[in-house]
Every structure is written in C-alpha cells, then in structure tokens.
Image 1 (spheres, rainbow, N blue to C red):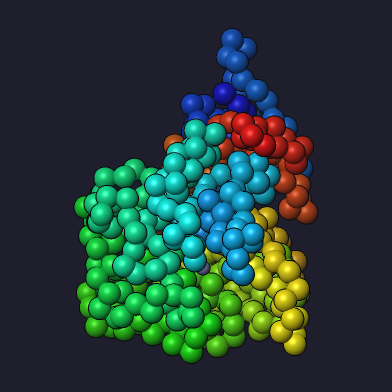
Image 2 (cartoon, rainbow, N blue to C red):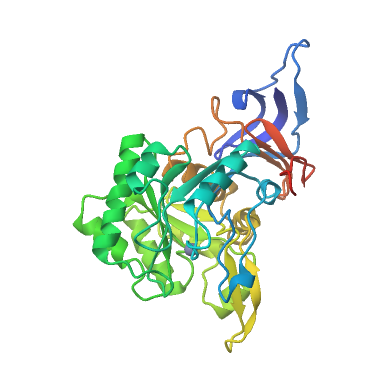
Length: 389
Ligand code: ZN
C-alpha cells in the first residue's frame, strides 16, 4: 500500500490538493487528510508542491524495433522497460512497422507479454503495414476475440510509397473484420492507420465512413501532422467527430523546417481554436521507429529513432508555448487514448482505477512513476529495470 500526500491532482481535470491511497495495484481512496492505521504497512510518498497525473499511454510504439530503411544495419533496437517508464509511460500499445517480414506478430505478442511481466500495461495491434495483413491465428477477428493482448489492427499503411497499395475493397474488409472482433470481445477493435505523404491523404478512411456503416470511432489515423496539407484534412476530419493521432517529435526544429511537419503544440492549438473538442486528439511517439534524416538538398545525414520521451515534451510545449491548460493538454496522453482504445481502468485518477501515476514537479519534470501500484521511477531515475538492461 502507498499513500501519496498533498499532491495537486490533474485527473486529468484539476481536482485540487488531495491524498491518494493505493492498494492492490488500484487507486482505493482519494480524499483530504487520509490516514492509515499504524498496523498497516503503508509507504508514505510526500507529494506536497508536486503535481499528480495519470500514467501516460503511448498508443503507437514499435516495441520490437523498427525495420531499418536503407538496409539491415539500420534495424532499430527493441523498447526497454525503463526506456518507457522513465518518460512516464505506464501503458504501451505495440505494433509492427514497415518491416513485417523480419519481425512478426508472434514476436510482438511475446514482447508484449514480457512488458506485462515486467510490471507495466501493454497491448498490441494485430496485422502489419502491408495488406493482406499477417495475423497470429489466421484471422483479424479471431486475433482480437481470442488473444487478450490484441485490441485492434495496425499500423496499416495507406497513402505511402512504402505501403502495399491496398485496394479500397481490401482496406474495407480489414476494417470490417477489426470492427467485428471488437464487437464480439468488448474491445476497441480500432484500426490504427499510418498516413503517408501522398496527396491521397485520408481518402480511403473518408470514403469508408461515407459509404459504409463503419463509424469514424473505429479509426485512429496517425502521423496526421506529418505535413501541412495532411494536417488540414485531419482538422476537417476531427470537425466531423473523428479522433486523430499526432506523432510527437524530439527533433521538431529540424522536421518543421526541412519536412513541413506540423509542430504538435501548434496543431493542437489550431484544433482547439477551430472549436474541435479536446477529446478528439491523442499523441503517440512512433517509438523505436527509424527516422532517416536528410538535409534540405537531399543529402542523407543519418538516422534517428522515435522515443516515448516526446509525449511529455509535446505536452510541455502545449502549456509553455501555446498556453493550453495542462488539464486539456494531458488528455492527449491519458484519458483520450484510454477512451479511444477502450482501456478500462486507465487514463484517469479515479477510485477503482489502476494505480498508474506520474508525480511531477511544477515545471513538469518527472519525479516518481508508479505502474499498477509499483514504483518504477524515483527521483527521476528508473528503480525497476528489465533483466538485460
Ligand atoms: Zn507509421
């Protein structure tokens, strides 16, 4: 059991300075001046002068590592436990990326099981960048229904030169199979769609919503901020009630100048200014994905890698650069992904919910991270690590 005393709580909405009692991996009580009987074994955590936020959810991470563009030597490494928790991530959703050949769904599920055993919450998308997708059981619907870890399909690439150029019918079929899997299992059955740089942008998603019974809530298009034109379409999509996923970026100063990428904080401010609900955006990291860097004249400069650190960095920029209230900005990495992905017990500081928490200083520096009631990070440093870290 743990008792966090006198922290300013953003649940994500601000609920004041309170104490929070954790037991059995859950949030048991939230109140003022909570005490525990002397006979109880309770660890007291002083939260005074600090902010308590729900643990962060990173909904798009290549936990197995990403396929190297430019050759095998560029394959990126697997995600590590502390590489997630040190940045406040207590829930991760893993997916395959461009390379669905050198890495497969069996290894992905094994990795997800490993992260769960190490103490955080982890889920996966079945399928692959390419269509027809690879699955575990031979069927998207069966994977979602029968495999605990699988909550949807993704990332499916469209409008990208690296995609398998799926036809509209192929795309529709996999969306329908995913929706059915979600309905039959009480899961999200979400289709996480990688959007590339092509001018076809979100055409296939918009057509599916218009022509079929599949609602916009079934889709989570990602990388919507990869260029200005795509982002404009994403704004219109959100106006119709669709949720969009921004990809965070640690090197945005480079990407904003050279690649026309829309800075996450600017994009979120724009959406709010357009009157779009603060429920309709999420931020994910594309963690462990490879990021080839080119100069303005097309020279290969080197290769970077997505990291979950960008989630908090983007939230900070929303607050500091765009004056977006903290309680609005953190919805993008807490309550919004929890709702879209139907992750029950996640994304809020609420009695009965999982004890996934981030205790931070007022300038949004991580002090303590708790996952399912266990302290993973203390004084900003991971105290629980994977076996081979
Ligand atoms: Zn992608």
